[in-house]
Amino acid sequence: MYRFYSKLSSVLAAGLLVCNSVTAAYAAGAQYCERTDYSAQDITDAVKNSSLHDELKTTSCSLGGLGRFESGGNKGVYNGSCCTGIFQLNNTNIKNYAGMSRSEFGCQSLQFQVDTWAKLTNDGYNSAPVKQLIQMGTFDGQKVDGSFIAACIQLGTGNCQQMVRSGRCSGFSDINGTTICDMAKNARSMADASCHEGDTAACLGPGDFNTGGDTKLASAAPGPTGNDINVASGQV
Image (tube, rainbow, N blue to C red; front, top):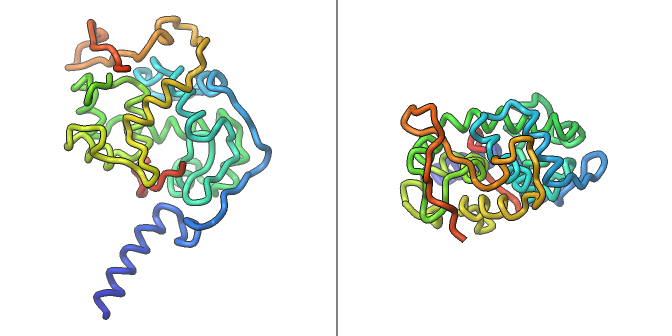
């Protein structure tokens, strides 16, 4: 019996890292401060003005789509289980990267939220699965572009590693059945059709990544084919 409760305590402790309390998983969603409806272009502009890694910025149009996919453009939305804001950061990452509670975070400006997400995403950019994906160029028929890398980090680099090891998009899906490949596709499809970033080429399609230490962008790269998220601490 003791071993049973010890194991149960470990499971509950893991749940606390995701949502701060086991009861939060069953709580209704909430709206912090005003409800917003930022467009994909609004979010793209904020991404451009953030500290996000330059190679991810090359597809900031699709990252605007990712923000729409995650929150519908509502920066004050809490999903009722773990995550808040435009890019749906979990409670632990909000505390670690923004130094505040989720209710405070939901009331911050769009730029503040995107800046916080950019710091988190930059850390994930240096992870092993992201580096491996960039070297691969394509994964299970999808081009590895900024939206794909962002989705990998968004759903957790540990989960992304599980997918990479499997060699298939179906190697990992969240509790809603969303795969990293699904999220990347949704990000692209929800980008503003008339997206503009100053660098016209950046909006023409998924960007190429530097590979093998070469300072030039990869050439002749293959073309693309055509919610609540629960993750562990440090994986979003």
